[in-house]
Length: 275
Length: 268
Image 1: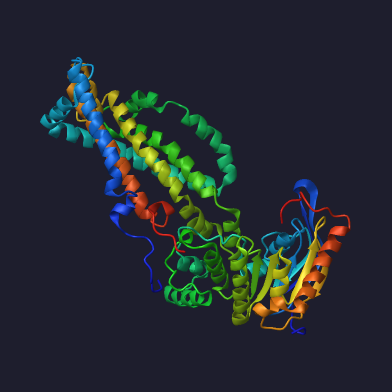
Image 2 (image 1 turned 30 degrees about the vertical axis):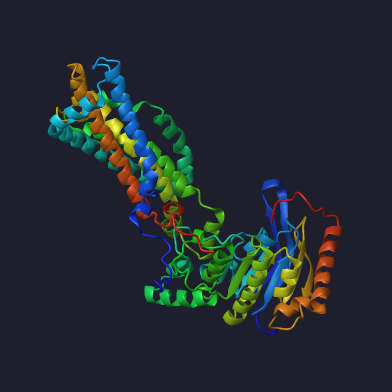
C-alpha cells in the first residue's frame, strides 16, 4: 500500500495475546494456591484416594504413564479435531446458504433450534453401530454434530447483523450479492464465527471423550478413563482427565490465537488511538 | 451554466411508504445543474433523506420520473455515477483507511498500481497523510468522515450525495469540514446534493437551498445563494449571509405553519 508513516498495531506477541506477563501473575498465584490447598486438604484430612487423590499422586501417575496417556490423548484429540473441522465447516457453509436465501433460513431455523435441544450424546451407541465401534468416525460424527449448532448460529448472526447503511453503500457502487458477501458480510461475520469456534473446541473434546465412553479403541482417552475408574485406579483416571483438560485448553487457545492473527484489525487486539 | 443539461432532474416524484400509509414525498420537482452545490433542508420527517435516496436509486419512488445524467437513476447507479456520504462514516472496521478508500476501486476492477496511486491522491486531497494504515477505530470522528468523503470521490463520480455528513460532529470540526468540502468541491469539479438540518451550513455551502416541509414531504421554497465564491471564514460574517439565513428560516417557519406540527414523525 501507500507509505506507512505510523505503524498502528504493534505486532508484538505479548500484546497480541492481550496481556503482558505481569497481568498473568494473579492467575498463576491462584493456580498455585488452589493446587496447594487441594494437596493439603487431601493429606491433612486423610481423604480416601478413590474419592480424591492428591495432585502430587496424579502428577506422578501421569509421569509414569506419560507415553500411554499422551498417545491416548492424541488419539482422542484427533477424533475431536476431525469432528470440529467437519462440524464447523458444515456449519459455516449452512450459515452462508441460509444468509443468502433468507426465506429458506426462516423455514429451517425452528428445526435447527429443535434439533439442538436433542441430547446428541444419546446417539453415541447408534453412531457406534453406524460407523463401527472401533472407528474414530463414529466419535467424529458425535463431535461434529455437537459443534455444528453454535458455529452455525453465530456465523449466521455475523453474516446478517450488518448495518443497513453498509449495504446501501455497496448498492450505491452497484455491487452484486457475491461482492456484498465477499467484502462485507463475511468480514463482518468473523468475530462471531470465532466466538462459535471457541465454544466448539470445548464441545468437540467433550463429544469425543463421551463418545469413547460408549465403547471404542483401547487407545482412546475416554476408554482409558472408564477402564481406570472401573479397576479403582483413580490416579490413572485423574491423570487421563488431566491430559484431556490440557488438550482442551490448548485447542481453545490455538483457535483464540488464530482469531488474534486473523483479526489484528479488531479493537480487542489493542493498539493506540490517534488524537 | 444554466444552458447545460441538468445532472439531476425530478418530475412529480411521490413516495408512499406502505407501512402506516405515510406519504414521504409529494410531487417533487427538482433540477440540479452541473457543478451546483444544492442543499436540501427541513425538519425531521420532511423526507429530505428519502429524496436523496430516491436520487441515488436506493429508494424507488411510487410515481414520478428521476433522470440522472440523461438516464434513469437505476442506470446511473449501475454506471456508478454516485458517490455517497452518510451521517455515519460507514467505514468497514476490518479495512485500514487506505483500504476503505479503495473499496469502490476494487469493485470497479482497477489494478493494484492504479488503486494505490489514486488512494495516494485522495489521502492528499482530504489531508490524511500518515493515517493510511490506521483502522477506523483509531481515527477521530472528523477523520473518519474525511475517509468516507475520499472513498466517495475516489472513483470520480459525477454526482456526490451527502446525507447530513457532519451532523454527528462538534461545531468546531463541522465548520472546518465545511471549508474542506467546499475546497474539495472546487478541486474535484463534482456536483453535490447535500442534506442538512443546519440553516447556517446550508447557506454557507450551497449555490441553492431547497427548503422542505413535512406531512407530506414537499419542497416549499428555493433560495438562490448569491454569496461570492470562493467562500471563507468572512463569508459567515457578511450581512448578506445573515439575510439569507433569515430567508431560509422564514421559509421553514412558513412550512411549519400550514398544518404541520413539529414533533413525533418518523425520522428523516
